[in-house]
Image (cartoon, rainbow, N blue to C red; front, side, top):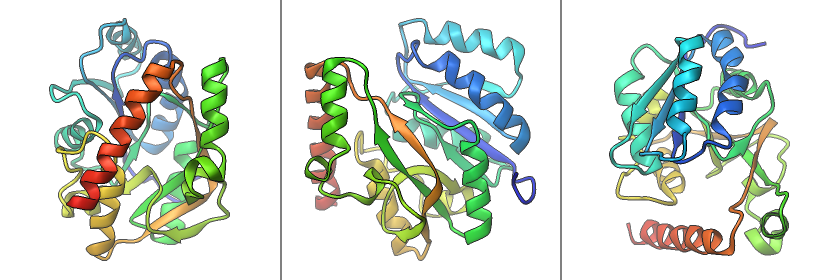
Length: 239
């Protein structure tokens, strides 16, 4: 369990995630109770039933808040959630709707932040799939050939790093550097990590928990996703 109650803000950027959002909220609600956290689903205009599912969960748990993200992109979703609901919270926990998490994921993040004094705790991101396209994409993304040996694509024993998959951040550090750059639709995490390090903040790669990412199920979806990643990296270098 966590050393002491650290009020947190759990934010889920979301767009058309009806397949995942219900089970994800059911899993996060006990953690939110333990951490004194509010769960903000920042939705970018879902049309697949996501909003109805979140609405049903809200009836049973007042910690869940549905926030309309007019700008649609993830960077804007998290900035908006922190601006609206960050006051009084110590940590921001970012949850990707298209992912899988251990039951104690949020607890372990807070524990490591408290134990290390880190301003940001990032995690390893393992990829898994069930269909043919998902399995092929997962195999590529889990390999060093496919990822270039990125540390956050492989299990870590716990270490200080320059960048990793965003999981937890001190809200005071997040606000001090201006949050995410909303001109970035992709690669906003790496861009923010650069500014955090420049400002003297420290990033810890968790050795106690990780997440599972489920890739796109079609080649078309993968194409446009990685086209966005490439543009984001180029934009980051130019900035």
